[in-house]
Image (cartoon, rainbow, N blue to C red; front, side, top):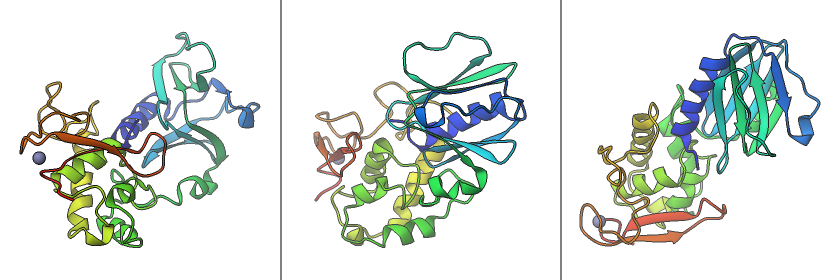
Length: 259
Ligand SMILES: [Zn+2]
């Protein structure tokens, strides 16, 4: 599942292809907006907010997309063949480039003035210019009885963390995923580390939290269930927590993150 850093890179690719260019093709392959047509309008910019993408178009319109589980934006020279079947949800193209939204989890067209309706609930964006760790801590602290593992994935607290960064951040801070938020000693240190991990990976594909880019060396616990902890040798545990169908996965080291 794409996390905040991957969405940040997607926004940069869409900016490179679409910003300042007049749309020559616009196809919304979602029932709700099937008749929408943005051709002839200039794309102003695409920005990311947590895991959401906002593509602003001349005339006060915004295309809101979300990659959810396995969505992607594929950018290619205009005229390239488009994937078949019903996987394509949206095509935006100009004379030089086309952006094809495949398996997007959300596609909305709304007034730019109404963006708050789709992203206004989000907590501070870990990769946003306005990242505010104190505000993230304030939001996390509103519900001290929830588990820290669930609270970090709740995008209303802070926006951009998915299952990989959750597992890696909690490991690096030595925090058991089921600890109550109210019992986590240094929430500011926790969110600041999560921000640093996302920021360190925002310009390249892949998630490296160990500083070692070699395959099979990139993470401390995520994807390593049953293998020895890199620090203490304890076998990495794997479990589920929370409610989202694909967001429950958690891995941790019982030695470094005691319950
Ligand atoms: Zn360990």
